[in-house]
Length: 309
Image (tube, rainbow, N blue to C red; front, side):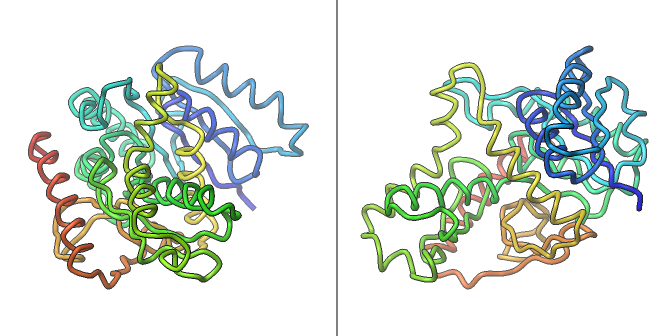
């Protein structure tokens, strides 16, 4: 059986870890693309030197030419400038939008039937730009945000309670930024509602730390942003597509009236399978949760307006 092909656009920190995870798990053949000559080739070769240790025979190549990505089943786009201390995701808007225009053209030309997962920030605007520039249907273009944000929420809860993170279930909605909406009411630990285990003050502290988690990593690293956790989150989504897993994951999906919003990408729970985002699931939100999601959606809309999409 022919092995799937994933092309990773951007051979920086995230792209390098993505390629490693794909090779270790034997998910697909990998093409690592970057505009910087030598970087994708060097990272690909380094990973190839470890294949025997992982018992993996996937093909890993590096390139500076989009033609080598031709026929890809899936693209994951991380290309762009990473955040530096003091920068918000939104500060990256202009420079990364220019990069996305070039990436979208390369994808559309060489793999017109591919599914595209966008990771580049500011995420909700970049994924909308990708959809518009490629002309791909909404199901085949979506963004990695909620899987990462929910993973951070889960970790902070597990850390506070001293339990396994595997037994914590949580969901974070909204834009991938400071207005994201952790939902404590939908968080449980081994089936036990979070509010049975933690008081409101502790929950609020964790929710705030989740919103600020990306910036916390940036401040500590000083010269870059998070890369292992975004890589893992995006590969989890890629597996859901390539193996038609029908996973229910929070992702930046294009809304057409769901949750009261239309024409934008916002983080919501979706079903992911072989065709991409197969459907949006609408949670029953109370008035305060709805207000927070609306506020986050308005922040996304303001960025879209600034980008003049």
